[in-house]
Length: 160
Image (cartoon, rainbow, N blue to C red):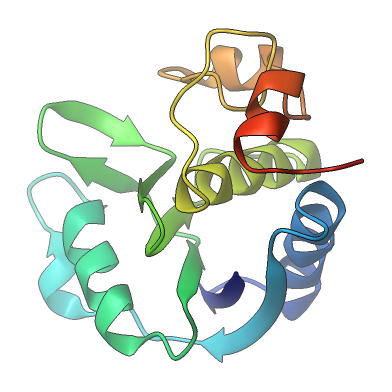
């Protein structure tokens, strides 16, 4: 599977760090390319919430990607219906949007990128000690491990 990384208002160095984490985790499953910087569409901005609508951004991304799947890493806060904020949103086998707005460390950014791309390759949330655990709060994201559990690795035919 080919994955194209787009980004908005973050450095190319940060994008490269995320790319390296994805290559390390999904070697042999996902081939990662950097697609370049993209402007955030103004219609995705929710003035009342001072956040960007993740659904609108994801739909926009899916119309702009050139490869099989895509990840859009942005620096702005994301929201979706019924949630105060979200770290990211993904559609299986299509693409994902990831916000680093609340992710203050390199480890958290890498971990959540690996999580969102896990959804892109078809993984659901996992209840094992796994990066695919659902994170509703920042401390939950801190607590979950960086790596995929053996069950999730089997689901995507990842050999280590």
